[in-house]
Length: 255
Length: 287
Image 1 (cartoon, chains in turn brown, blue):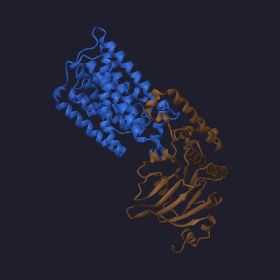
Image 2 (spheres, chains in turn brown, blue):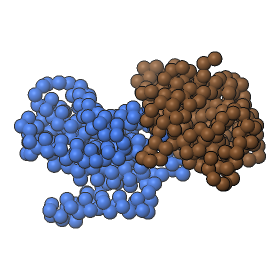
Image 3 (cartoon, helix red, strand yellow):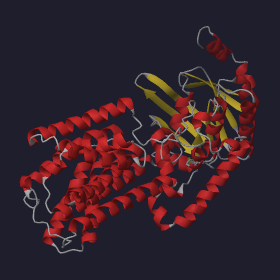
Image 4 (cartoon, helix red, strand yellow):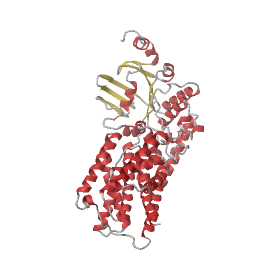
């Protein structure tokens, strides 16, 4: 089966700081891959390389077998790469529903001529986008807050909106950057259920997460990164039993 | 009465200028000071066409808008490709450089200006007609920008201004939106320029100096940057200000610098004391 995301010999460094060192991995449809490792390991940088925010030094990234080389961040998102952010990066001047509506993969009004030439079909497309956004918010149990400002939401609710916004892109690659950081209670369970459902629907999901129990609950496989390198890979249980992880997370000499 | 009517004509022109500048700076977050040069391009295009060819006036105004849009792309395409801050630097060069070019060309009338622009409205009610057209066009520009901002394109503009990185990572093309905003704003300034040329029948480079930029910016800041009614209120208020100072009978050598000083003080005072401007609505801050 063809991998949704395939990375081969990926390298990136900023000056002397190596953020990706010969990275190679594959994530298949329906798989949830956990990325764990200490701060500065290169996990978020890997997401930035996949989504095109950073240019790679060498190596290659494929999405559904198609090379992403030369594609901008915008083009990659349109190919189906959706992501969340550690610090959410929501649009504070807009309502929850509006945050979701602008995140659909194809937004007809982006071509300003459509506003004049095809106003009716644009209106229909907009209505169906709103419907999809409301449905996504219902899944998050946030539909009652659809017209609220982002600033009126709790931190956990904002995390949910960040995830909901990423789900508006109906592509099959989802990158989640610390979806659980600072989240507890009902929002925690909701995020877990939704990530699982999305994987079952055929998305390939990568999760950067420090919450090991979340990774253990959800991820079929995981990789352990440090200094831009993949040090270990396997099931979460295998990694948790690893001496390398223990040393880097809890102290002692680096492996 | 004639004097009040001429102020009304100017009011329409400045409402177009400030509303379109607000689209660029207030909504788009694009910092440019070159708005007066697009005003000049519209005025000169209209003047040159009116003098040399006997075209239908609305068509001439449309050409003036088109030329301003083309020049706006010449400025925005290279500078926005790099990053937003470069637009400010290149806009300064564009404003100063292009005005110098205008001053040294024969067919623009050089430093002494372009005169003898044919009159398109004859009769005793000429000024009243111009006031009506000017205010009518200002309303049209205001409604067009309002329609743009209230619709799905407005959502894109807000999202882009809030967080361009997240916006791009969702597949939205921030660059294209910036170019469109800049082109629409500059095209509107070209329209204002065309109207100006037809009304005064004379245009000269000093009418489009960088001081105009501070005047338009003051209108936007005082009225409320990023608010739809703000630039309208700002333009009306600020147009009455020179008239008020005029009653003090200062010599012309004092009036110019004094006006510039007042605009600068107003911008600084508003930015410190009421950055949201006069018309800011508490509801979302965008009405």
